[in-house]
Length: 118
Image (cartoon, rainbow, N blue to C red; front, side, top):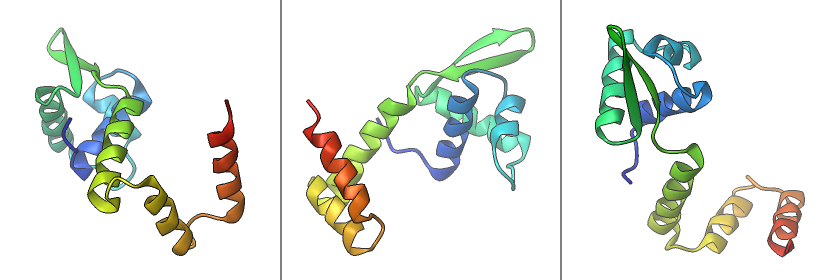
């Protein structure tokens, strides 16, 4: 699964939030500044071509729905990110955030509890 561009990720976030819908529905989900309708339509078509979306023709238009779950994409993206930037070490990832003061000791304790859960 390939990494999506920022524009594609923004469109997929709108699709995942909506569940299924038309381009106008997705445009309503996107924060300002919103892309032009035609730009979003092109992005949606590209996502369908790449296998991230599927569509159903209804009259003169198409209704789109995700072909890939958000969790599946996150899992793939994070695996690639950790591999590319932290030599596949999640320990190094957490250490980076701790050293940058982006994660607190309380957060780390919560993570430890999650790891130790059976």
